[in-house]
Image (cartoon, rainbow, N blue to C red):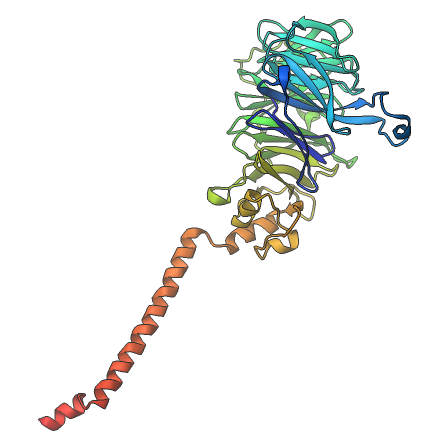
Length: 452
């Protein structure tokens, strides 16, 4: 169940707070632009949210019609008793509600998705149902059972002709006939994130079993093309294709519940060919999940690490920013006061960096106060004043900053050495003073020789 999300442009961010409010943030300024707290019959624990775009309704006044947007950004919000609310970000108001008491749709909402045209809204609930709603009227269009196990995630194809539901198994559904057309098995635990590649040729799923599987959407094979794995449960996925016509590789980003980001770079077609030549094609049967796969899990090409101690920056949302994939947009800080950063993940030649660390005392301090550092000031450890700015961090910017700030143990050692030096100088001065006083009083060795 997704409780945080960037919109499709990365300009806005939405999250569910611990007291079941929805806050929408402007990423550029870091300020909250909207806040919605359900009341009355809608006042129940919130479970999930999803961004979407819907056609502007015809209720706008005549003077505002020319200036009104044709498409409005919306956030769909689900709760524990089956209600779904559609918040219109363009108008700053509740636009539509679905389900809930008296509707027959009272199961806990696990996931929500809108179709590309913004006319239909889909939900999957704890009562093992997938339901389709009319966005304009709020009426139920149709519903069907997903099977014995409730679906945890939901995805709508860009052409609006197919939806995907996922529990431990993944099912593809024909929207026109409302029947399951294909079943993909491979995960040993519930799927918690799912996405398409940009061209919809591949489906990527991540599960509590810590595996990420890449599937081919065409054909009837139910075996994954590729297996990836993390040392913690992956909770968000983002995929991009190469922009260069000579670049046949894709890149997949996964955020783990530990707050780290991993990026893989691979050629799905190469693994597809491997699968076609393998035993799966000859037998025309899918292997059970317990059978070892013929493709070993790939190691990530790049890590964005949160760090340790006070400098730790826990990432709660991440996505590729821009078509070139040079930066990753992340959200860190606390749910009550998130902060947004752009993390540079490529070197001067365009290759992925092995590792980028977000940990630094200066960055952690900025995040805790809802502030970000200016790139030109970060090397000096200064904090910006006033409104928050988006920070561009790279390995070159971040790692030297960490070493320049001296870890606490090194600071103590250095301070002790300085204190020792200071004490030594002070003792020497005191000895000199005593010697001068002895001579002045005639109590030195010369006086003693004279007495003898």
